[in-house]
Length: 188
Image (cartoon, rainbow, N blue to C red):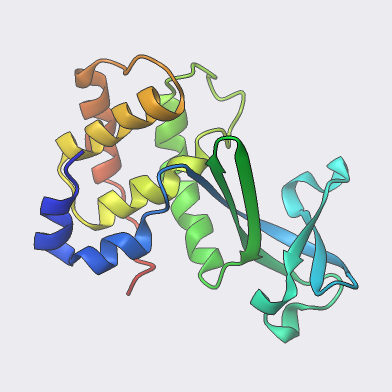
């Protein structure tokens, strides 16, 4: 994928690089609630939407503002999972633009679930494609063409999902739908 042309010409390579995650990184953002302060400089939190699952996560306390390091506080975290076989690294940290990112996810997610859905989940796994939202968003705010967004979708299908890419016409339709979305700019 030739991202360099439009990244350099339209917005600058630095902006593109600051938005796009490593190609083998899965990025999700979600709201958490503080449960307790851990002894090792981390904060124990639970995912607000999945509180009953009893899965507690540990977030690096140095990334969280002091006024949010209180039991019961809620904030958004960025959950980076970097995969480079055979190693998997996970980093949980405070997301300063958290509420904006949640709006971005809530805007892009329905298009990925209903119009794209290459794994044919039919809405049964509503956050399945969240890991790709950061990269899709980066292309959209950098004013990528529909063809470039469609190419990204094909890359995700082939390289990350290990599927045969969906037909170009379908991917172009999804890309055009994505390009019509009103999205806030977290880089401003």
